[in-house]
Length: 426
Image 1 (cartoon, rainbow, N blue to C red):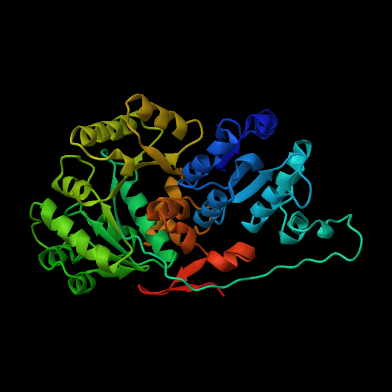
Image 2 (cartoon, helix red, strand yellow; image 1 turned 90 degrees about the vertical axis):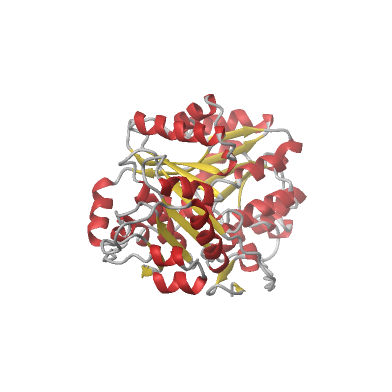
């Protein structure tokens, strides 16, 4: 479970003890800030998915918390509010941002963590008369506001690179595409590993005629749609077994194809070859506006190769702020992702961790044989593919997740119908 904590000096010691007892201390991301630094810390925390956020009320600036909640509607937030009483304005503002778990006594934090609250339990912070010990009949009032407003769509092209064979690069690319499609997004998967058609195989495609050559020759939306093979909600372009010799991929041609696809689809995923000097890999890294760098934490050579590719990109003037690390095939006892990101930092490579995928080699092999990617069955916040798709989609994920009942989610959670208007949740 991914745990984040934004604390002040007043709560750091007590929360640290709880994290230690629960075995979360080593993996948790903890930031100790001043109240003035809460907004920046929440903004940074919103960039990565987490199952739990422990937040000191002193650092919970209302607008920053609202932005976090919109970006991460599925994250459980526990507000640390020692010695606060019902009616407190800061806690009430957090409840209005759909934060229902309130720890007003840090000695009871374990109880709060083990017993999730709902709006009825948190309503007393909005109105002291709703507190359990208040005289009179308990009342819970929830007002729902439904408002329709236009939502900007962020079109993205993502290249999945892994400069070593066997690190699960195609597995990551395919499951990312399927997970995004499962959220209702329109997705094009382009297999730039010429002649192998491995992406089509993962999706159960025949791989005879992949359509990539036709799409490159006619880079228009109608041409892409006609040339692609639709599998599990994803449009797949690859070099099929019967497509003849594959010409050297031209970076300008691949970039032109991606720019056209971005106008018609929400996400374009580029699966690359393992060799960094392969024309397809070079073209993909030039055409993508973000890169997922895939490595196997248990294979030091794959980690070193990934770092070497990033150093090469840095020398070429690439912005590594758009690069993210995917630790695939994470096995018990292997190097932890935080160790690898620390290794990257030592090399001055500012590459953040996007997702950790546990080692399920047999399951993914069975999925490959069946042509049914694991992401079809792994849905929701607990799925690494779901988290990876949210991180890849960037600013929009808070508006693209499944709907939840509650005060704020009824107002803010939107879903997409086709490529056009986003409709408000009902």
